[in-house]
Length: 76
Image (cartoon, rainbow, N blue to C red; front, side, top):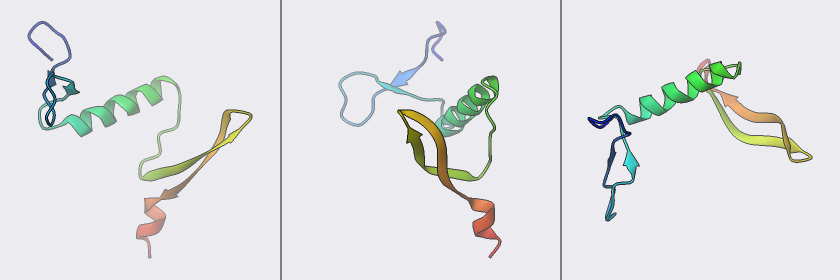
């Protein structure tokens, strides 16, 4: 955050204006924490180690998902 409480941004690549939000060297963790917090607020189940690679839709609505559970992959 900036001193006046706004989201801090920085230049990225060859950009001529600041457009990249960051949290020091912990940006990825901050995004993940925010997503998990929001999912819990919405009473969604958070499943650690599950990677979704395809959403299943019917009539324009999400009906399910296909993914891989890393725990199953590591047991072999």
